[in-house]
Image (cartoon, rainbow, N blue to C red; front, side, top):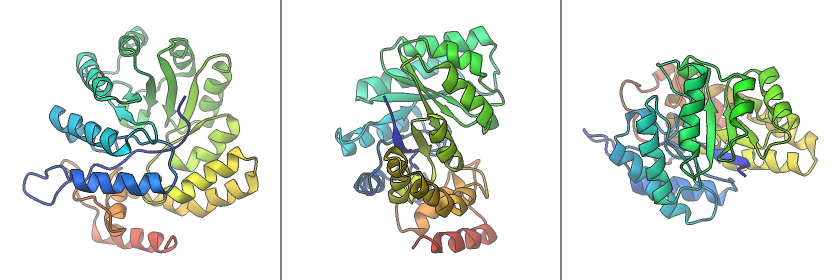
Length: 291
């Protein structure tokens, strides 16, 4: 259902005391991404600093994104929480606003048991909007195992997983176990996009595509056309950029990179803090390779 390069977009804030949303800047960034060939837009994910957005801001960002995109590509809204009732509230709001799907991080901090995870995702999938499960153990402290994902994939409302475990063996097992389901496996790590596509994955929810949408889209399209050599060339060309996105906690580096490219970004909200001078110099050097 969802494939290709799907940027997890940054949420631009104004450099004022309240760090208000910069919705004009958001619109400009989205236009840049669509003009450069992305296949979808993902607002209010981890890269969009969703944990620091109020419910009202969350709705504003999703509504503004849907309005600007205007049906040109799918909009997949981040609606996860470690509180099932809150995740339901976010997901219902995204559905009512017109999102094409939702990205739901596995509950963090609580470390729910297997039956709790199944109930959590089933309740959300029953809301009649396509759900992408998001597995990112580095942020949640809990891995969604292949057998659990394979079971969740049997629900018709659960259409994909964003896999950011970094475990290629696990990702392969999920793809193998869902071949008979209408279910996609989407890379959650830019640097693993090429190998996940080779295993049968359908695309990437990307950090780096915020600033290099054209090259990311070209890599995906070359792969789909069977031009694996060109796709691999793009993978290695982009690899230094992929690594630079994690010289500090995401989204600190990408937000600085967006700003350095002259796009709308603004500061990160506490408890995240700005990229320091040494890492900013390092990032500038990497970005200079893509001018």
